[in-house]
Image (cartoon, rainbow, N blue to C red; front, side, top):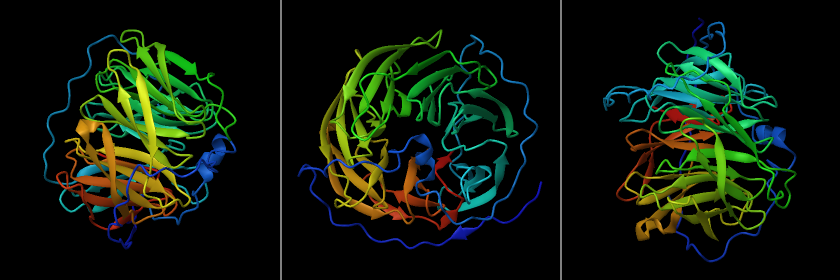
Length: 426
């Protein structure tokens, strides 16, 4: 393998903006240019970023495709992590855009200071724009966001690619692992479909167990078809939910725990043209928060664990001051007291106080993200750090999180990584 030093870039940060009152109306609906021209357009918005020096760790020759998952019990959870010492960080990118990456970025971070140190790139995985890890911490999963999309499993112990399976649709952009560790859930943006793959005892993926394409309702204003953007499990584990930007709908399914098949049990609709992108549950399990990308709003949702029914509330402000902005992702602190939203365009992190045991969001203000176009945000496992992957600037920025006061404070220097669209700290 060839080794070079990873590049870093020191970016300035501002202070919190003044708090803005939520509930005073919301920006008028706007068409999101990232999505208006089909799934390929999604990849290129903001993709031009300065190239960063990387280390390359060639992946081994691809092994035979993974076999069908066994019916064995889920693997035991990994032992508790030690709080001290560097922790792994994996960075997703696009490999097929100008100045893009060459695979999954490999790095580590100091859990005390937030400093990131690059260690290489896992090559051989095309357009790994979103990443997730198995509950036992042993296997990494990546989407291959191409027209003929796939999902790939990587064994973390030796970074060996365990195989790739077809996602069954175009442009897979999100994946998650069911809490049992037996099923991988993925969302295909281009075709508006969601898929389920079995996971065997080694972490490898089997052939698809199910694929559902969203055909109803009709696409919303400015959309040419369905665009599934997220597929996740409810906190109670009884349902899986798919967020579709193209149809302005959140679909609820029952997942057969033995067969991996899906049965639709409900639909929740935003106002036309909202363009829902990302749903995050409150730790209490009865409320969730929805980021609407196209009309630049968020909404509080009420969730019924028995039926899987989701009721979407009124749109609220994102702190973007009405400028061009596309909300990306929401996070909620483990104690359920604060929420944070990544604002692409405004290039900020909005801060919300969570009130009424999860029933209300109150906008406190925004903090500059220190980069351009924050595509995705993630907490460290202990919740003390927040990582932001900034697509246009090609950087990952880090913040210290005050779980009691809801404050965000820059930690460490911005880390340069080509077209950074996902940061996964372990």
